[in-house]
Length: 156
Image (cartoon, rainbow, N blue to C red; front, side):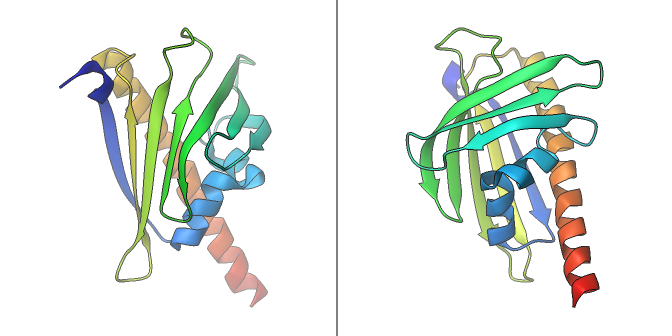
């Protein structure tokens, strides 16, 4: 495996349509609700969701430390696939990671999302910490979907 292929893959099935999962990735207020996980605050979200468009989000940790996430979109196929770079400001200009997100409907009305982080700029231990962190982000995404579905039932 080459360095650029190193990383991790997470597959999650959500009680949400592909459009809902897409919206979680591409709508600033939805993105802010899950990016960083349940214990983080996310501010200054800007998502220019088009090939070559930039994105940014400032994550504020409970201790006040801030992580300035930035990147560029490389592929945008609504509502099926997003490929974007991921830069937390800690590496050099050639040290961004890549998130590849695919979203597919399941036969039972849910969505399967596959997320791969790659790039080869992290050690195996750092990739494992990133995988754990990303799973916590996706737990918060799942909670967002539960609240959205709950709100739809309450307003029906």
